[in-house]
Image 1: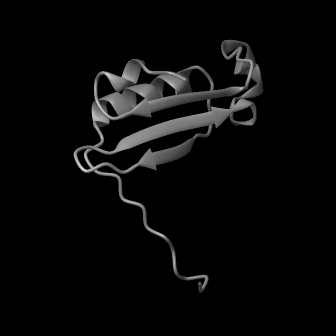
Image 2 (image 1 turned 135 degrees about the vertical axis):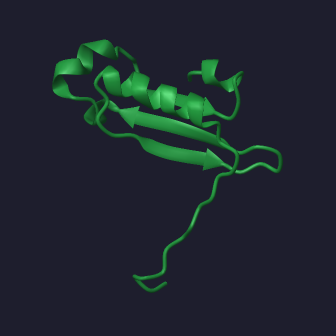
Image 3 (image 1 turned 180 degrees about the vertical axis):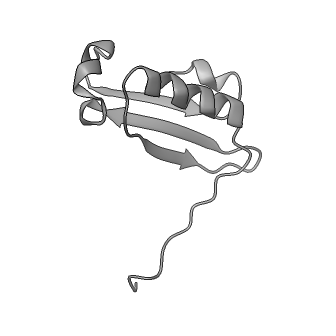
Length: 85
């Protein structure tokens, strides 16, 4: 594959209000970067936001005490926003 060719990933029908709320919440807690993953589906795609300890500002590390240092939030609809892995 040439350098100027890029893979395009399109995730459809992601609820913006939930997505933005999650991003604002983790940003306010000290997360500076996220990895975004998605799972396509025929009816509604699922998007996930992941971050590790290195993505958190040093002053905010105490806000995130987690054995694996990873928090996964998957979003597809209102029911999924409460699903934190």
